[in-house]
Amino acid sequence: MYRSAAFFGILALCFGLFAAVAWWGSTWPYAEAAAYLNSVAPDGDVESYTAIRHEGIRKRSVWAAAGLACLSLLLAWGGVQSALRNGSPAIVSNAFRVDLKEVLGRYARRTSSSHKAWVAALLVGAALLRGWMLFEPITYDEAFTWTYYASRPWHVALADYSYPNNHILHTLLAKLSTQLFGVGPLALRLPAYLLSLLVLPLYYLFVRATFNRYIALLALALVAADGSLVEYGALARGYSLTWACMVAALVLGRYLLRSADRFTAVLLGLVCALGMWAVPTMIYAVAFVFIWLMLYVLLRFHEGQVERWRALFLAGAVFVATTALLYLPILVLYGPGQLTAHPELPAPGWQAMQEGLADSVLGLGAYLSDPAPRVLFVLGVLSFFFAAYTSVKYRLMVVALLLATVPQVLLQQAVAPPRVWLFILYVLHLGTAIGLFYLLKAVQERWFTKLGKRTRTSLAAAVLFLSFAVTGILALPGRHWRFAEAPDVAEVLMRELRPGDRVYTLFPWEAPLEFHAVAAGLDRSYFHLGPDPGSKAFVVVAPTFGQSVETALKHHGADTSRLGTFEIVKAIDRTKIFAAPFGPPTGP
Image (tube, rainbow, N blue to C red):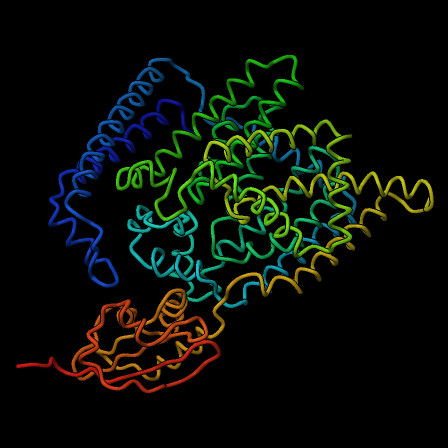
């Protein structure tokens, strides 16, 4: 167990090393930096890296080095001050571990074997539903994540935010997974899949601790089978990681309210920062958690507020500092604007937001309700309003959610797409579970007096899970634009391509095709280099989408004067593969 002096000393050393790396980066000449970036680029040429951009990066590196050096000195001073105080307390106490062990043991003793079986059955069912989605064809965003980020060196994946598709923490996990298990859809999706399962027991524990085991079982059934959560729980994106971090933050926050433990506060800040490192839109969920905790302290605690406010301040400081450190490479390379207003995203503005607000809200409602049974969806909406009206605890969560999201949307002058808002389902389904619990109680007391609380809740959970699962199975396969033919096209190219050949294709086929080609064993240079004289040029297009051989060649700037006549090699579903010989240079 580290004493505070040693803890501060280790942190000071780490930040001193970070400062040295930042200073070393500021000394790189432009020619060397550009040559290195070209060497790690698939096509060998990073046109966007200019001398002007290099100078901006160099200046930001100097500022980062200075800031990190100051932070290192402050931590070293704190370590010295701590060492001068004999018997300084440990940074990490046993209280959190002891309390966690006691809570889990108490739940295990007070939970019937049948209830445990129902919880286990729901978790297994959730794993099977998401496991089924693992075998769906690849989507563009998933393939782009690997081809543009996860396939490149670790430090490039860590610092390249040229497109917002790079959910950095998820990208690093996906890179690790594909290196361990090979390139393929299953390995790429494994981190998101496991995290989407991890959130379920955490969610159950939070709801049970806040309300009761019966509401927790109903809520677990809903989130386990909700189609939108199932879908993104099996997509290689960072959203399921943000859900896990949000629910973990709720669990930690609830304990923080009880104990005002500073170790818990540090954990809370770190968990929120990790979620932000996955997807910056985690800021909505982070604001929700902290506002919920602040409302709880204000309205539910009349004694000990000072200690809890200090703990919350510590958690917030850890969150801000850790998030800034994790995003420091991007802040140095691009500046803060790359995170707050990415140039690849639509420009924010009041007029555009006002014109599209109604469509965005209706679109979100349709997206969330589409994979849900209509009757149960309507019943869920009514249950949500009932829960918000009757339960003070739940009402605080709803208010916190509104205060966390609406002002941010207005401040950003933009409404995020539906996938960003999936985290609110964990709050909405909780309200549905509360309302259904009391509805079932009223029905039992009036008509089914011999039906026990345990039995009615278990049966209702089973009906909810099966209903949502069946509806989701029917609705989900067509919700995303997927590229089912990409593996077959890759197999054809595997047979046809020879050294020196080149493959040309257009958006959105380029990323899925390259991903599956590499998974089949092809070198990705076929998509970026060549063709050589005497080789062939292959063009993969989708005519039904308005694509042609000519548009593909023009897009890539190919020398068409040296190409022979294109002949069709294979037609697979929406795509056609053409090939033509590539001759030597023409002219004298």
